[in-house]
Length: 628
Picture 1 (tube, rainbow, N blue to C red):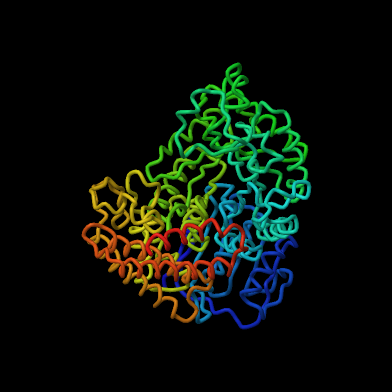
Picture 2 (cartoon, rainbow, N blue to C red; picture 1 turned 90 degrees about the vertical axis):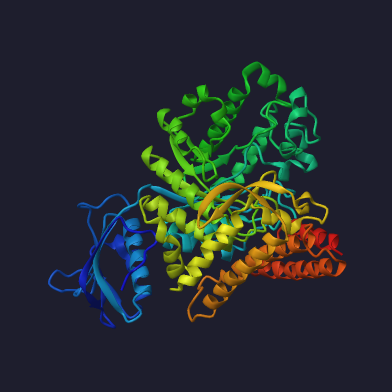
């Protein structure tokens, strides 16, 4: 029997024979610090008793604390005909060994475990997931706890939530009003669960740019670079791209009141986290130097003003015993200042394309800084993740990070445009990131089959192939339309240029291979995609019908993703020049979108707070009405 693992272990030696553990027995430990690991093993063998190691008694399961030859966070798992032995030098290592054992037990339904020896350790000390709770949707605390527990099973040990306005500040009740914000009790509960599962729950709070959700409120507008009214002093502001023009986007470092404001936020937020680190964000400060700080930036330079702000945030955070991390995109524009970044700060180097220049992460190594590689799940602005781009991006970044001795990998999952990309879509990307940050040399060619077997509890090759093909379809990226074009088609009005039937330059994906080519968005393409989606949906439905499959309940969400892309394909069949653009055909598509809108609400409310669902429902309503 072939056993699948996620992450794949570094060293696996399969031996002859099977281990038939008795129905009752002992889980013996030689150190009280291993009791937590014993508790985890007891969930696999509930009729066992936890006891101490006795040298002249052979127990069927032993958990031994020892350090000889075992790397940091690593473990040795041995299964022989006589029993199971876990050896680790730390509680974390023992915990990770128990998660590997759980995967073996899951795949051994007869109770006979394969004999083997595993020596394993992580390639990176820090292995994280960064989840966006700001773009319209805030999950319930139960959903977040389940997410954290599941990530821990796959050896993730850092967790962050991206927060702009979705935390309930007592001193600032306007922030988060109407957004179902997380509370102090939520953060404390999540911190506790994370701690119990060897995850560091790192606070993250936007502290420079990306603050339109906060600065839009009248009491805070004067803190914004543009005074909250779109006022700019630098003539270059007129040439800023439209997608960067967000009113009240960034705090202005020229206004000393912003530090009083941030001090107030930090006083409420930071004490809720046991982590000694804090992500102050500070990315994409597009309007810096254009408004209130125009004269300051002319005198000192934008780069210096930016770095001074980082240093000030470092001081504010230190009052709460936190060291900072921040996104590295802005400081890259000022390479001469990189050596001046405080050495206790950690730089988050991000980029999400399959062909990102991963090797430039060496800039931060050369400056003697601590840094993470920060890839992404490629799920945002898409109806399903651009699976193959995500895998290429995650592996490319992890490989470069490992070669440059990065401290960790932080895998990001954003929700741009309303967060219609459900969390459930991203598990393939989360677990691929978990594997790459544990073992960058793991076999990528078998990952989806292993994911299907372990996460979806299905041995169906048809299901694995369907997941890969859906990733191919979702990838389609047409020049001029950000990310997956299916999202744009799905919400587009009939007069949108997408339906003009003209050739377009695009990035396509076939069998996981990403290439540039010309395509035509027409009825013929729509019909082809509908046929492929029909097969994919059938594979999902067949898997869902299998006993014990889909224990995490993601397939209803994935089938919804298939149906939304199918609706977009039907819009091509209906609205393009070679399509059947009749009033009756348009009404039929409109009715299909209305039905999907109702399903969307049900799926959202099953696991999330109502939050700002209206952002996406308006997109649905406008698209529905435009076809009537």
